[in-house]
Structure formats: structure tokens, C-alpha cells
Image (cartoon, rainbow, N blue to C red; front, side, top):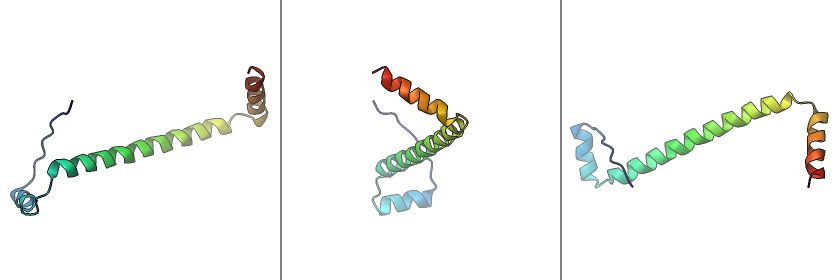
Length: 74
């Protein structure tokens, strides 16, 4: 189900939207989707950096041991 959003613009901008027959809903939807993709990408990047920082604190021997134990359980 879709929701309704209201955007307030000045008269000059509204006149240009009409003049150029711009699909406000299409452009607004695309801009919002792009902004969401950008923020999700940033969020993932920050999570990766945090995980990298945490993983760097674990000794290599412990990681190797965990991998071997995981393989042995199969």
C-alpha cells in the first residue's frame, strides 16, 4: 500500500514544473530511493569498518582454530 507525501514549493517552481510537464511523483520517488540507497551504503560501510576493527583484535591463531573447528564439525 502506498502513502501520500506532501511537498511544498514556491509558485515559481510550481510554474516551471507545469511548464516542463515534470512528473513530480516520479522524480520525488527516484530522489528518495537514491537517498535511501546512499544512506544504506554508508551504514554498511560503517558496519564493515567496525567489524574490521573488532576482527583485528582477534589473534590469527584463534581465527585459524575457529575455522578448523567449524570444518571438523561438518
